[in-house]
Length: 50
Image 1 (cartoon, one colour):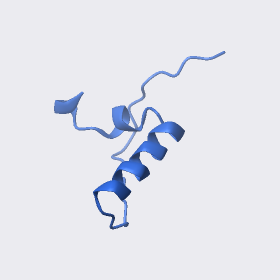
Image 2 (tube, helix red, strand yellow):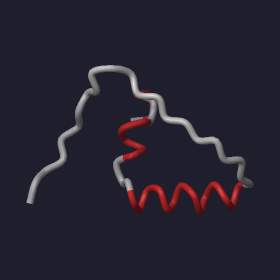
Image 3 (tube, helix red, strand yellow):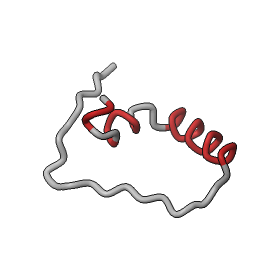
Image 4 (cartoon, helix red, strand yellow):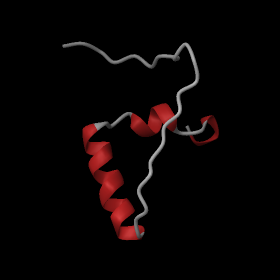
């Protein structure tokens, strides 16, 4: 087993989403995303929200 350590990317990372969804659509989309990539919010959230 290995541990996952936070990393600082060597350059800025831009994450974009081009879908337009209603509130329930966003809930489903983000719920599925967090199942597949549980550290997504930690990596891309503004420092003020961590």
